[in-house]
Image 1 (cartoon, one colour):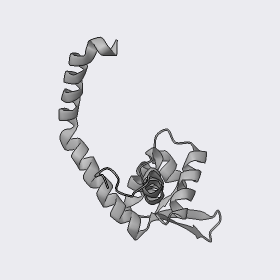
Image 2 (cartoon, one colour):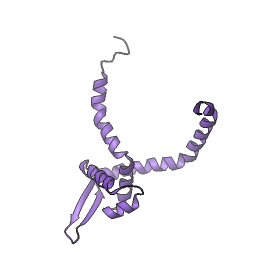
Image 3 (cartoon, one colour):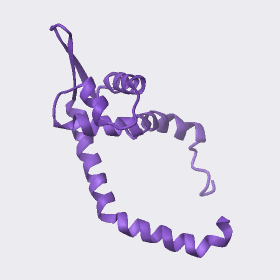
Length: 131
């Protein structure tokens, strides 16, 4: 048997990777990350989320919250008041995810100048190819 033939097919790899990819796609989405960050301080109302996330439409906020709730990352609590008060809160699993997002954000902040300088150097070196 050659070293290249490991007996692992593309289908096998995709079957295992697909659920992981689905989770990563959900939690790394533009709106999901912003909602998770906004809700990290505790329960937050829909309108507060809407105001704190620039550029999100009501429909996209609703759909993203529904998906995050379905995935077990956000809980939705309806208080029996008039008008009804609805709050969203991160679950313990989402709090763990928020810690990871915070570390990633810290890394990006520490390295943003390095990345900007690297991009500029690359663009200068490859400018004839880019034009």
